[in-house]
Length: 174
Image (cartoon, rainbow, N blue to C red; front, side):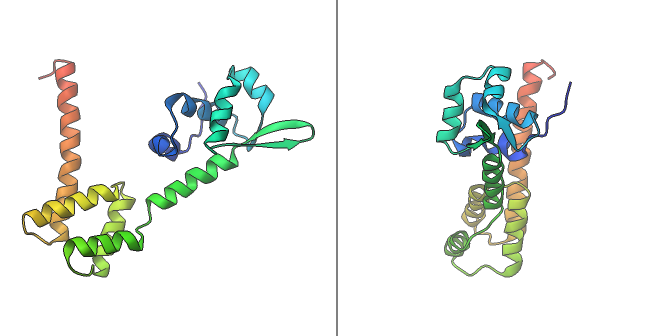
């Protein structure tokens, strides 16, 4: 069995790109070639992919085509760039987000609080989850980032516990 280098972002965020599972599989097959350009005809025939599937990826601007030496190639740079940009966008806390939190807290964020939010985002929390944790802390009348962090971490524990309990029930381990 061969190892295929698949961008993590493709697996984690494929829905953000409006991709379905079949399109992700097609992209994985493309990444299997480990080339920047893949001959379109060879790919279609080798992988038994329908032209319409390629057209769907083109329409969604996930891949592009390049004509070179009387051949048409799939250009995977488009996909790689899009995934890279999505990753950068996921890890950025923009002014709008900061203003929103300032509004929710009814005060200006301190630099260490902004750094803490950036840390949470880099750790994989979505801005919406962070915002929900802030709301939960304010409902309890607690304006403290350690408490907000505890809410985030407990939420992750709750998710893991629910999955673990479901698995135990499914396999009769309880």
